[in-house]
Image (cartoon, rainbow, N blue to C red; front, side, top):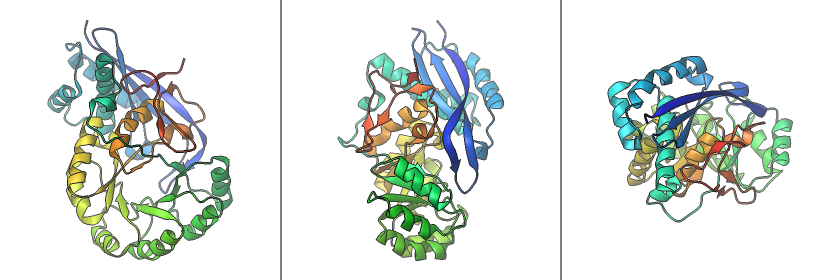
Length: 343
C-alpha cells in the first residue's frame, strides 16, 4: 500500500491576544500534516502558518500535496531517508513544511518501533521545565495574566518601546519565579548592557535576542559587557548559524520549524554542545501536535519554551502536557510523539 499524505487546515483560536514586537494575533492558522504508511499507521507533524514568515495555508497545502506522488512509492520513510528525498526533489521547500514532514516521519518511526521518539535517542536522564510566556501588553494586563496563570518560570516579551524595566519590576512584585526576557530585536546594544544589571537584580536568568540580526558589532559588544547571558533566536535559524552564534552569544534557541525538523535540530544541539553554548528550544503558536514533537528534545536542553498549546482557547490535538507545579513534561500514553486528534 503506498504512503498517503493528508493536510488538515486548522485555525487555532488564542485564549487572549498575543503581542510581540512584530505583531498582535488572536488566531493562528496551522497545517497538521498526516503521513499514512503502508500498514495504515498515521504520523503527524505541524507547520504554523505564521504571517511574519510569509506563509499561507492554501499555498502551502498545494505545495505539500504536490509532493504526495513522490512519497507514494514508499510504504514507509525513515526520517533520514525523507530528508534525502526532499533534498533531491524539493531542495527549496520551506523549512516549516520540511519540519512538518520530518516530524510526521519521526512519529511513524516511533509507532513502528513501539517507543516514544525520545526513547530512541541517547539523552541525559534529566527534566527541563518549560516557561509560560507573558506577551506584551499594558502593565496591568501583564500582571493580571501572570496572576491568573501560576507557573514556576515565565518568559516575558519586551522590546515594544515602553518602560521595560518597569514591566519587570511590576511582575516581580507578583512572583518569585525566575524570568526569561525576550526583547525580540527591540533594543540597542547600549540599552541591553544598561538593562542587564537591573534585570539580573530582578531575577532574570537570560536575555533573548535583544538586537537585530544584522547588528553583529553591537552583539559582540553586548556579549562582552552584559551582566546576563544572551541567547540567540532570530540569529540562529539552522546548523549553518551555530558557529557564528558561538562568537556572539552565550546560547541558542532552536525552533524545529525554522531548521526543518527534529533531525536537523539534534544536529544543531550536538554542534552547539561542542562549542560550549547553552541550549534552549522554543515554539511557535502551535497545537499539541507541534509541542509534543519539540518536547522530545527536553532532556537535551538547558531551557525550554514550549507553551504554545497552553496559549490556545481550543486545541485540536492532545499529547504532551506540562505540570503546573514543576513545568516538567507529562508524557501521554502512546508511541511516537504521543500526539493525536482530540477524541
